[in-house]
Image (cartoon, rainbow, N blue to C red; front, top):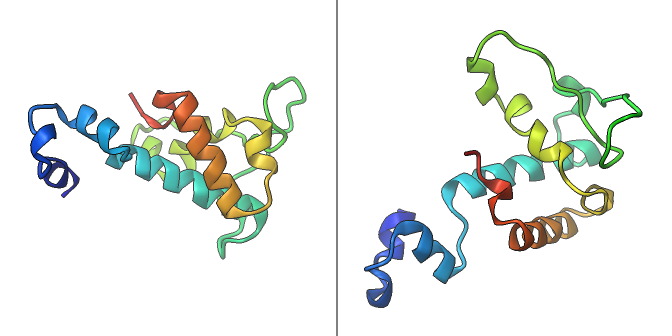
Length: 128
């Protein structure tokens, strides 16, 4: 649907999909999924979600790590299938967030931090 919508604009038809999204200031479907994952994890960390954080994640208790104070430990797996689970695919992106983003107390302010992060580092929400 988003591909089709972006082609409705006559002056953007000649551009490729990523350029159309950039001109329209829209997030790609991949970016929206990754953003939604981070928002859900933020709700779990703050206790806003009905799913408790401890049911899927453990805090990383390694004092040598850089970054913020809410780093989560990665569970090891021998299967590639597990890489697509929510509890695995969100970890690298979450652990690379700045301290200011995870210190906020409301979901809206967390979303604002994600928007600023995307504006500063365009590929942050891309999987590559």
